[in-house]
Length: 499
Image (cartoon, rainbow, N blue to C red; front, top):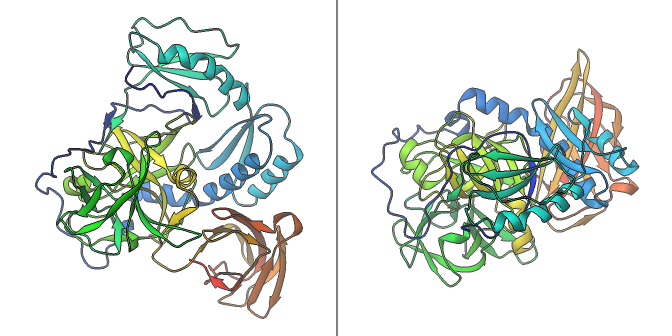
C-alpha cells in the first residue's frame, strides 16, 4: 500500500475531489518562465485579484465561521455524545446531532444563532459510532493487496462512512460488518506537492530552497506565544530537521527545527518572521496582511498562494471549497477548486492557505500539501498548533487579538450586531472589550456580556460562564443599538488594541 497511514476522516460536506497529485517538494525544479500578467498597479490588494462572485461568497461566510467556531468549541468542551459534524451549507451553519441536544450545546446553538443562521439536523449515527465502524474497516482497506481502496471517511452529516477507491469496478476486499451504512465512492487520489527573492522579515507565499535543492513555499510566519520565538511554517515533506533554508536568491533564512511527518508540517527557525503574504505574481509586491488564524469547516471557501501558481497565473487560486477533514494519522483536509481549475502546482507545497476578510486582510487556514487537478489537500492551522504547541501567525500589526464585527439585522432606526473576539495571546481570565462609537449610537439590549456605556464609549465585560478566553480561543457577544450601523473601531481587549 502506498498510504499505510490511512484510517478515518473527520468531516465531509458532500463534494468530489478530481485528479489527485502531490505538489512536488524535494527536488522540485525551478519555476518556469513567468506567464503571469504584469505586476499589479500600486494600491492593488487581494480583493482586486479574486473574481467578484467568489470574493463576495467568501466574505459572506465570515459570520458563519464565527458561529461554527463557537459551536465547535462547545462540542470540544464536553463528551462526544450525539455529535456528528458541523458544516457551512449555503447561507447557514448546520450542526448534525443524533438524539436530543444536551443543555450546554443547546445554549451554544442559541448564542451562535445571534451571529448567523444555524440549523440543527438529525444524524443517523453519532461521530463516535462512525469512528468505531471506520476503525474496524481501516485495517482491511490498509491491507488491500490490489490497492484499489485507499481511504475511509466519516460523513459530516452522520449518514455513514465512505470507502474511497480508484476504480469502482475493481475487485475490493471483503469488508467487515459494522452496523453502519458504508458507501463505495470513486475518487482520484491526492499526491504530495512540494516568491523568488524575499527578505527579512520573511513573509508567506515566498519561494524557499533547502541545502539539498528542494524548492517549496513559505506558509506563514509564526511565533510561539510563550517565548515570542519566530519560525516559518511550511510542508514537512520539503526537508528534514537540520536543513538550511534560503530564499530564491540564496540569502539564508534559518535552520529547520521541527517536523511532523504524519501531518506534513515543519518549522524553520528564523530571527525575523513577517505578517504578510505574497498574493500576486512572482515578481510584483502585491501582498495581503495576516491578522490571525481560522478553524476550517466543510463548505468554507479558501484561497492558496503557492510560488509556482504565482508564476503561472499571477493571482491566488481561490474558490477552494473545504470538503473532507480526516481524523487519522495525517489529519489532512481536502478541498475542491469549484471552477475545475488546477488547484496547485509543483513547488506550491507548504504555501499559505487562507480565508479572506472584507477589508482585504487574511486569516491563516493551513499549508498546501498535495493536489490533483481541481482536487486539493492541505494541513489546517489548528493541527499545526497541536503539533508545535501554542503558535499563532505573525500578523501585520502587533495586536494579539482580533475582532469580527457583523451586523446581523438592521432597521430604519437601529441594528443588531454580533462581536466575536479571537485571542492570539496568552489565556485571558476575566476580560473587558471596549470601543467608541463613531456617532450617536446607544446600546439598547445585549447578550452574553455585561455592558456599560458612557457617551460614545462602550465597555463589555465577561459573565461568569465565559470569563476565560483560551489562547487561540474566542468569545462572542452581541447588542442592539439605536443609530446607524457603522463599524466601531478600534476594539480593545483588556486595554490592548485588537486588529
